[in-house]
Image (cartoon, rainbow over all chains, first blue to last red; front, side, top):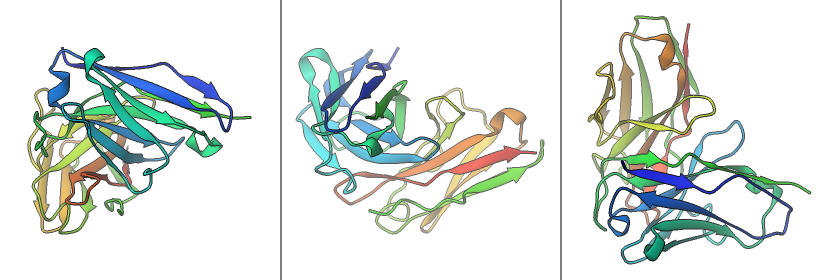
Length: 124
Length: 111
């Protein structure tokens, strides 16, 4: 079974750093793009960016460029989303997603599966 | 990169059909047949319902269908059921460096 399992909920203070994870299993991790999606409380889905673990090609939405870092460790089939200095406005659910077609030139088939989500709460 | 435009809400009665639109540009929806639709129930992760404009993943009811005309994609749900009440999001591949863009979401209410 293809699965993405995310790390657990986090409670942090403004200014702190954070790295959350997304472990893929049941498929060739290096062959599929992995993306990150933010959902603020009561709001819609926002595209943050995506990485191709095969060659670490990484793209960011302009809204998130410079605000977060997306990375991947092929050796443990895990993608990461990290912040160097959290703000209260980073409070949200974060989902990792896998593009459903394989290969670096893959554009289609949508995102499936989705991770279960990681709730990040930033509060003083 | 602007989000794709969806109506904030739609509603319908059980058994009826509804359509949700998703409007983009020639750089995303209009330029590629790579539009997807996701269903999200409260407190749950989104679920892929339609990919590549009109294709259903295995296990998705054939009451869900997708189409596209120009820069606007549409999701149609026929034979509305109470369990269809959820938020629906479209997304599309985009030629911009970000590679993907999402819609703002539409809340479906089954009356």
